[in-house]
Image 1 (cartoon, one colour):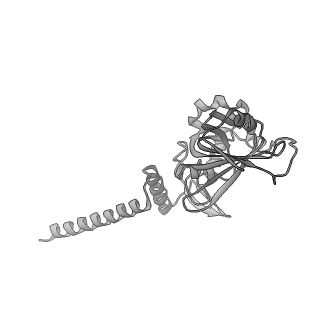
Image 2: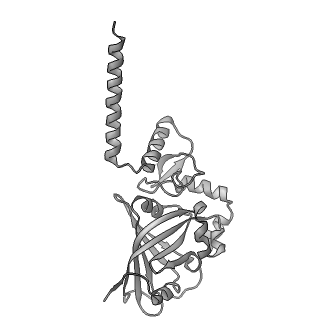
Image 3: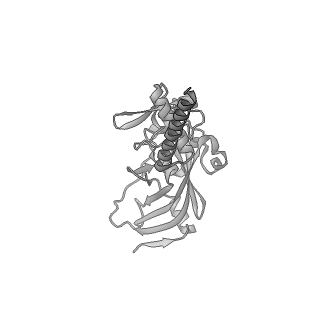
Length: 256
């Protein structure tokens, strides 16, 4: 039978520190639900307090967790025991994205091997409001062999500027066209980019047509102002009325 807790106990913390993989679940308000597996746990996952955890987010082909965290912050971390007693532990909470450039105060919680790596793009901080333990009777038993070094080796070939360019191109938008870690909203080194759909993903391109520039500017400022669709529609309608009034009064004043 499952059990719930308001916060992490010392026993929970000790168990979490032994794990080698966990899963992150987030979802857009309207659109896709995302689940991401995370490795390098012993060095990139930290328990900040009994009600707060954090992990390093690394550059990849997608950036769904960051996009969803910006939109609504709903997140669940799931840990599963692949050896020893069958245990599943879920941490339900609210997430906050701290971009690499602003993450200095969090870095001592993680191993320097990862925080100094060009692939490191953000810290995801989770305020935990529910800890849930349950049995894992059907989970198979696996032997841990080693971590894969492919991600580290791939980005070791890129300096920070090259990694940033990669994020601008491939991490500016989620698959639901939400802004993410490569976007100017979170990346002050990034220009406005045009969103173009290719092979199932939205890419951010620096070369823009005028219609793309107008859309990108509108998208940036509306998100910064946290405007809803209704707000945007009302502003547009108000702008049209103001323009019509200006045209009408200009025409009357021009009459002899």
